[in-house]
Length: 179
Image (cartoon, rainbow, N blue to C red; front, side, top):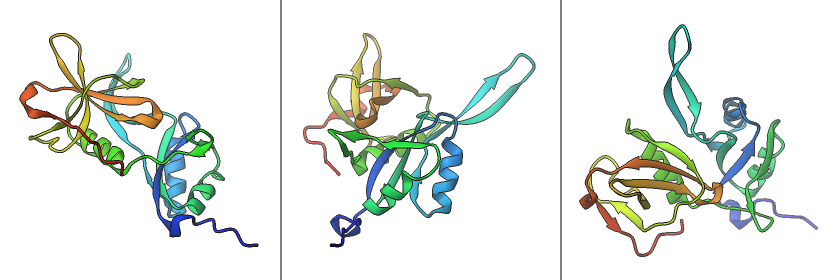
């Protein structure tokens, strides 16, 4: 009996892999060498030491890398050194919707300041209507005087947050696409 490891006719889906902290760039290079499509969101920051400042590029979500892979590629990725496991829900490898990866890519592409917040934030799902983030969907966080806008990767329980100066730029999203 032959087992079809491709599953779904070789369809590719986004998965999050939990990996060893501080090995993100090494694992990305390995996936590139294996031709496994991957995404490692990074942020460039200026770090201050006692004697100097230096521009440093760091992973945005320490300990995670995303792959867009067939089932066969996903299983092969788990064999790479320092890859611990695929993030799962109820024991099954969890697929991340394409729109969440695209939202994150679009969100961190600009030079706007943002922070990563652990945990999901309750609030209305909204879409930015205009400007450099037009079309990005996320969650509006009301914390008093400020409107914070968050783009979430639900599965990882992580959220990227920035300030939206003009709330008129936002519209409420009723139905969010699932892919």
